[in-house]
Image (cartoon, rainbow over all chains, first blue to last red; front, side, top):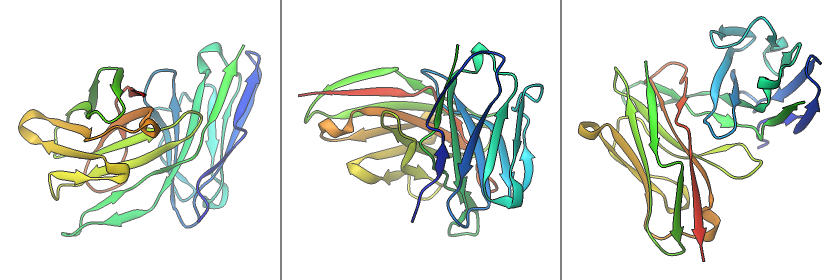
Length: 120
Length: 114
């Protein structure tokens, strides 16, 4: 089974330029996440999709960041214009519900390799 | 609100020695807890998870973790370190059920010396 695919793996741009990242989740996974991982820190959620609907984008800086998930499969995260502080690794993850004894659920998230963005 | 604190941003052990990576959490509801490993230039891989069943959880690559509610801890251990264990480890917490929004700690880099 193929894992989460992300491209490009690395991107170097100058500030004020636009940039876009692409993610293809694991087949059949309805939930898709975008995280940002700053150097020396853990990932932080930017946005979560259920199928094509963004159900949690509270941490997405909407003045310059946008995301879409057309047809509920692939997703694109865009930054326009990029700032120096946007340098980070952008991780995509996908999940599908798992069920525990007793009926509660959890989502095991599978992560892609990430896109390392450097803004000069 | 939930949070995770990983004590020690860097841990160094000798090959064959015990590995202990510390994680404390804060949660207003009974949490689900996870340990992920990240090798250089790769994504995160799930090592193990606690989802309110057995408090001692066994994961891949010989790692295990114990949920201690009284101490709000979920420390990761491995009896004998291997060179291939060198990586960065992240503890994460989420609320039970639903969509599993993960809140991560800042990570611990494990170095294994020959």
